[in-house]
Structures are given as C-alpha cells and as structure tokens.
Image (cartoon, rainbow, N blue to C red; front, side, top):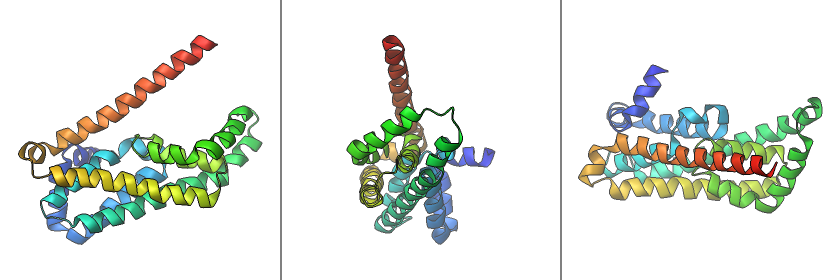
Length: 212
C-alpha cells in the first residue's frame, strides 16, 4: 500500500521512470489501473483516474508514450471496466433485494425508473466524479438498464472522459509550470473533484433532513 501511495504522490516521476525502463509494460499497467478503478467501486478511492489521465497526457507531450495509442487503449479499459461493474450489478443486485428483506425496495423501484429516463446522462457525467464513476455502472446493472443502451453510452462516456483529459494534459504538457508540478496538479484535481462530491452529498443530506 505504501508503494502504491508513493506512486500516486509522485505520479509524474513514477510514470516517467516506468516509461523509460518498461515502455511496453507501462501501457499494460495503465490499462490495469483504469480498468480496476472503473470496474470495482470499493477500490475506486485508491485510484485517482482523472489526475492519472491528465498526467498521461503530460507524459505523452514529452514523447515517452504515444498519445493516440494510449488514449485508444484506455478508452477500451474504461469501457470494459464499466461493463464489468454493470454485469456485477445485474447479476448480484436483484438477488440481494430478494434475499435481504431489510433493503429498501422503494429505492430499487426508483432506480429502475431513473435509469430508464436518465441513464445515458448519468453514465456520461459520472465519468468525471471520483468513486461515482465506478458506482453508476453497478447501479445501472442493479436497475437492469437495457444492455444495448448501456453499451452505447458506456463507450461514448469512456471516450469523452479519456480523450478530453489526456488531450488536456498533452496540450498543456509543455508549459514549464505544469510539466514541473504535475503531481501537485494531479492531487489538486483529485481534491477538487472529491471536495465537490462531498459538498454535494452534504447539501443533499441536509435538504433531505429538512424535508423530513
């Protein structure tokens, strides 16, 4: 766990060393990280995917990895990860509500209605929210969102998420301040996303308590 933390706290140097020493294996490592973060939401907090994609773009700007190849590879990883979460939710979600009577059946019913109406929007916007990006596909599976519809918007949302952040890092990667402070920017980006998510959650809880 300490080595993983050190990797992310010094992500720019970690990626640079990996690309120099193991150029081919680096692509596999990045694929595994993005796949894991989007497939298994309990592990998502330990994988800052948004900042990682930005750092990958910065690395590509330095010529250490190919921007098109890595972006295409990670679109596949993000798509497969979300599909895994969806399949897990579809397989185990309904059975959980049938087996455990204490689970809120009304929430289960509401989730069905929500994903029929807003499933596409939820998939696209959740990609930019830490933890939520892995939770939404699982819940979509629990709600039995139509497979073909999920598949279409899953690939679309993965492409938007990966390409936008890698491109941002790539086009800003030669700015001296950004190139020299990539790790701080990655941590700052993660803090902004997590802070925004926390504030939104607290506001929603306060409003719900006020209504109650």
